[in-house]
Image (cartoon, rainbow, N blue to C red; front, side):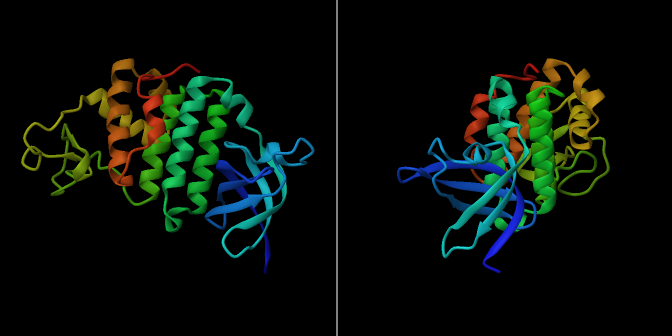
Length: 246
C-alpha cells in the first residue's frame, strides 16, 4: 500500500527548501524512516511542533521513491519541552537519539523503539539522574543489538568470575590470563552499578557514589562507541556530568 501508519520517535530534522523539513524517525514497525514534512516551518502548519526531536507521534506517511511524505501527525508523547528546559536532560537525550540514529536498519526493531521511548519519558519526568538514564539506555541498546557486555565469566575464554578487568575491545570483563597488559581494573561497586544499570535496578543506581557513577559512565561510553565503530558526538557534552542533576 502506498500509504501507511506507525508510531515513531523523532530523531532529527533538517531544513529543506523554504518551508519543508526532512524528518528522521525511529518507528515501531517500520524501522528507521526518512520523510519530508511539507510546509511544517510555516506558522500555519498544523503539525510542525509534533515533528520535533524527542517527540513521539502517530504518523501517516505516503511512500515515495527516495523519501516518504508525512501526511498526518498526532502527538503521543510531548517530551521535548520538558527535556530542552534542562541542559542535562537535553544533552542526554541528544546522545540517545544520535545512538538510535546510528543503528542499522536491521537493528531498528520494535524493542529498540520501546527502549528509546521509555528513556525519553524518564528524562522528561526527571525520574533519575539524566546521565544514569543515558548509561542504562546505552547498555541496553548494545544488548539489543547483539553486543551485550559480559559482567560475569571471561568475555574471551569463558572462565567463570569474579573478574575485575574490563576490556572494551574484548566485550567486557576478562580473566587475568586474557587481559592485555595495562588493562584498567574496575572496582566491585562500579561493577555492581554496571549490572544495576543493565537490569534497571534503580534503587541501586540512584544510591551509587559520584566516583562509581563516573567510572561506570566512562566504560559504557567507550564500549558503545567501540561497537558503533565511530564516536557519538553528543557524548562530549555529557562527559563532564558524572551523575547529572534531575
